[in-house]
Image 1 (spheres, rainbow, N blue to C red):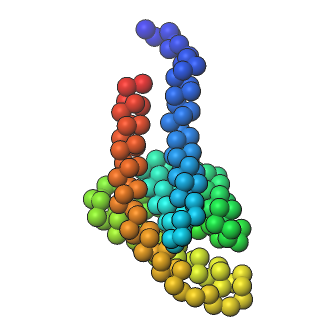
Image 2: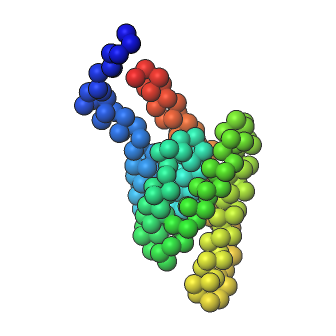
Image 3: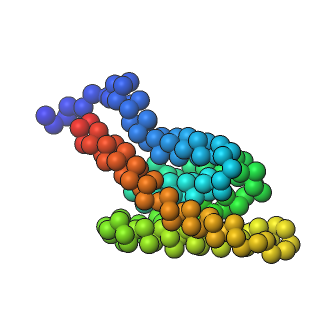
Amino acid sequence: MKGRHEPAPGLLRRLDALARAAFPAVSTALLMVLVSAPVGLPSALPAVALACVFFWSLFRPAAMSPAVCFGIGLLQDLLAFAPLGIGILTMLVVHGFVLRLRRLLARQSFLVVWLAFAGFALGAALLGYLLQAGLNWRLPPPVPGVVFWVLCIGFYPAIAALLTRLHKAMQRAEDLA
């Protein structure tokens, strides 16, 4: 009917919408804390953080805002005992570039997205290397950057598979609501 308003959403619907909106940030933070446990291997923390920011910025950009990227970068810096700002700047730069290329990348096959992510990871490794060099006033060894890049490329398929399933489940829930 014309003039009749739809009733306001109930508390459970609002909580559900809030949980779906917060899920990318919360799941990324929890995954980062989980992989930051010391196990004697090269840290997967930056690779996991970058993969999550890339994925959610590409497929659910409203939930991965610049403020959330800032928080994820800050959490990365704190968990990795890295100089504050390197993770933050890296996440914000990657988020910005992904948003610029979103229309092109979101319609591509997994292989193309993976190759694009490999390029983003290489750029993030180079940015981290340059920022580290600028902060220390000397060139750091390049091996950690190469390890970071290889870990990014290696972890992305598994992380993307998990996040794709979660993203599709969230889309189905939104379609029913």
